[in-house]
Image (cartoon, rainbow, N blue to C red):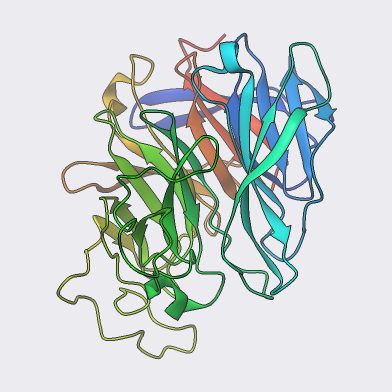
Length: 357
């Protein structure tokens, strides 16, 4: 990894903050999560999983073959809350499929203490045949209650598939940690439906997080305009591509308009699109003025969006030279805001200036 630069100061509504690089020299970073004891796992889309400690990154071996195509590759990583006991980690990635191109898959592995090679590596889920295109893998992972995982799947560039319950395209899934589906998922008894589906009618959800009340939210890409933030509920249809607040890139109307009976409305939307990515809800005392607010990274306009209120809506844009194409954002065990800049190839840590260090 390259040597990192000094901390930078930035004025925000919470006062002056300092943005400190943690590790630089990353190549197309996509996701990260925290290990107990201070380590951080970082994925690079081209297929590397890195363990970062004290500003140094070590590549971990043992991953399966990753299909690097368009927006696909090695994507999100999740360290569950019981990692200290289970040593389990989970990742999403693009997996080659013999029938049609590539699809989003979920990987489970064990990271033995002190090891640099993953053990017990197993793909626990892969979507129904995806697409030969390289778009819209979705791919955020969120730990749910009772040993479940929420997984976001994009429509893979086939909008109509997001309304087809026989396919996983354009959906939020709920899985057990062994890849099986919970029996109380909403479509288990629906003939022809994929039993892993929790909600559907999504375009390309690249941000997902639980709020302080344990509710699941996603931030998803629209087309030309119409990026959405949705509060996810069991069995709900979120409308894509029948309804949307965006238009096709040609300017043509999408579907039937902006609303339809039986399809949920977004909590908020962006027009023009910001290309939202990673998402987190802030808790704790590090940022008291932002307690309970959501942060969402923007890939298109190089900032972190802060959303607040009921309904949730954008109230601030946190923008600095370091916030180029923010691919993922999270809150660390230290209360700091951490984020990945794809443009800078760097993982950063942000805290109010008087708290930093």
